[in-house]
Length: 123
Length: 307
Image 1 (spheres, rainbow over the protein chains, first blue to last red):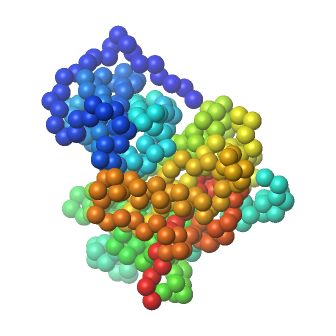
Image 2 (image 1 turned 180 degrees about the vertical axis):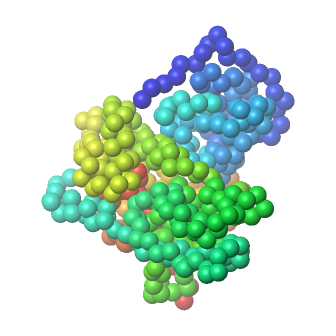
């Protein structure tokens, strides 16, 4: 399996107006009102988000996050075509998988880390 | 696990060979656009339970496209391969679920009587009006292959922290998929057997890759170890189900869900590969011998109907 190293010199931090997703609670609990806390990390040269920590209800899907990110990052038409979300830097769950199911299996000390890329970085 | 290896291998071969007779019928709407004097007869196919519909989508399309000579890809009709989708009892069928799983989940759940035979499985073929909001498109066989591989990686992440699939050559990955496509049992298991081994000085998988499906709910997946070290005992299918249902109920309560799942196992029939395995079956054994080719146990829970 090959991995793509983030291009550190090229990555840019982008400012976005933060609306749709809820702000995280300061307590750091993994589940607030049953919400899943996750970190979004850039890979494969994708732009780094200013706000990295998010929270969503368990029932929201991976597809929902991808669609949200596409709008949020104001991607151009070419980039909009493919946005991949990886877990464990290994696999990309199907879009109808709930964030709750992913979190239950792959969170690390209460936080779920997801990597987003424009290319299939990990296959 | 100390079971007879000859018998167990027979089971994997039986599962590999199990088929479903399916009858594909063109939708009324698309039937009306046919431009030949005779309407298409239903298409009958015997399909592997562990395969995926996109693997035979070209065959289905080729069969029906002969009835639309001249207006294929015609904008006004929008009859084309990309718009093909399958429906059962008004439910659009997900491309990325194995065929056997779809059959077990929907035909068992939607029948009023369990004694009615659902074979051949009657599926409606649509060639237009793709339900964008309900189905993910799988435009080609490469995308279903990518889905298969990523699922396999997830299974290995649970079983072995991804060590075994990570160490495999790319050609081994290819062999798994191609054997699935070409129905080659031996070629498949020559590689798959490696994914059934143990790592880290364990005598079992670290966690079991499984998904539990109940009609109209997203699937449930949890971390579950096949062996209880403290109590020194092998966990069973019953233990896994009870744990998952209880955990899910807790999550629902935390999220203030109005409708809480019924976590009484007696309330359900438990179906894997079209059969009801004994609930006391060790889950490690089921994971090794009863998983789908994607290395997951896809378990259907069918609510018992009030009679």
